[in-house]
Image (cartoon, rainbow, N blue to C red; front, side, top):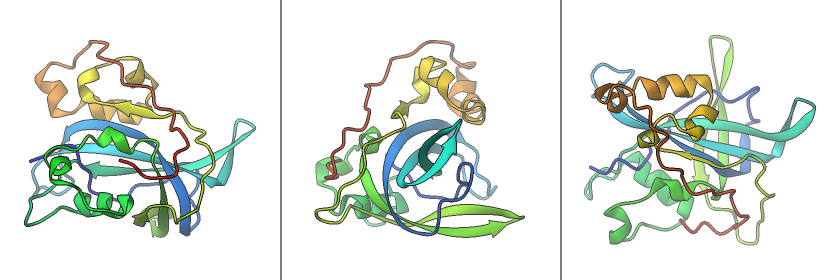
Length: 210
């Protein structure tokens, strides 16, 4: 089983919901949460990842400054099998606009998606007076289409980095989830600064190359 691939799931958008419809977007973060329990007791714990996206054509004012709206997705890091590809496999295949090679299927570095552009179709779902954004579909940018430069700094984090500077910069709720993962509990919550990830500010490459 490969633990570097996500299954798209629902999450609440930041600040206010992104309007429904298809939008150009860019992945700005890939945050590993470690092995977390499932909301359904019938399923085993699984390795979770949060993917963050910014939407340059949809802005919101933050501290007097207009910034792209963002949303994030909790995902399971699971590739599936050759005979039964996971939703993760199909999601990334749709994003890339091409299938994986045999070499890629043997091990895919999920950090490669950080900075990659895409088209995302957002749909809304209301629960308990809250509006949630769902990613209904994802695809590459259309031929000849461009996307505005990335605004939010790219963030890539793996649980083996411990409580390093990247961890300290994450939202409190994210830090709490990571601190409760099986990997940290087994290691008595690592204190190491850990290795620093490569800095990827999302070069404005409109061709999905991952």
